[in-house]
Image (tube, rainbow, N blue to C red; front, side):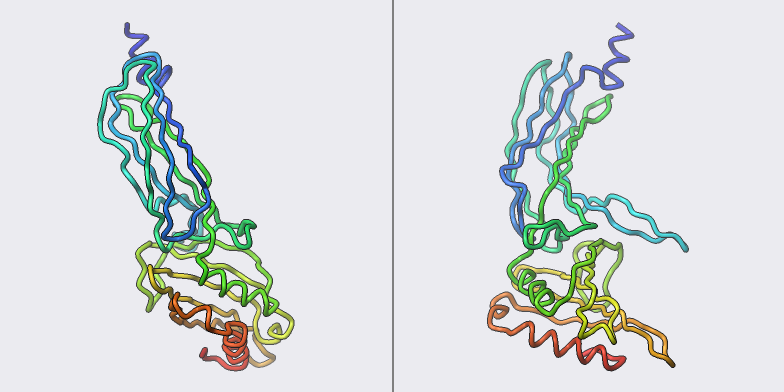
Length: 261
C-alpha cells in the first residue's frame, strides 16, 4: 500500500492530458479553438483544475547580464476541481482569445526566426506531479501589420531576426509587460546612414502604434546613435496610404539628421 501511494505521488500511472487545436494559425485578437482531453491513469485522481496559457521566450536583463526565459502572457482556466476515475476520459472544448499585442511568429507564411509561441496545457493533480502538454501556435500579422512589413520589404529591407524584450515603451500604452522587435537590415540606398531598423507593433482592436527604432551609422567625426519614433495606424485607412512612399520619406529624413520625423 505504501509503495502504491508513493507511485501515485511521483506521478506513475497518473492521468495524462492532450490538447488538440482545430487550427494552430491565428492573428492577434483572434480566437484559438480546440479540445483538451484528460485520460485517467491506473487509479482515481483528484484534479485541481485544467488551464491553458500562451507562452513566448523573452529577453530580460539582470544587472549587466541578459538572459532569455519563457513568459506566460495569457491564461484561460478550463475547469475547476473534479474526480477523475481510473481509465476515465474527459474532454473539454475551449475558445481562447489571443491578446492583440501577441508577438508575431510568421510573415508571408514563413517563420520569423527568433520568436515562437506555444500553447501550454496544465493539468493540476492533487498530491502528484502535474501533467502538461505544449502545442506550437503560428501567429500571423493583421492586415495592417502585413501592409507595413510588405512596405519595408518593397523598399529593399531584409528581415534579420525577431525577438521579445521585457519592458515598456515610453509613450505607448501596453497591456503586456514585453514587446516584440522585428529587425531588418537596410537596403543599399539607406546603408550610408542606417545600420539596422527595428519595428514594433502594439496593436489594439481598431488601431495600432508602430514604433520604429533606427540604428544610425556614425560618421568620421560622430558616433552612431539610435533614432526612435511612434506613429498610429488606423485599420480603416491603412489601405488608402502609399506606405512605401511615406516610410521612404521618414527613413531618408532619419538617415540625414539626428531627429526622427
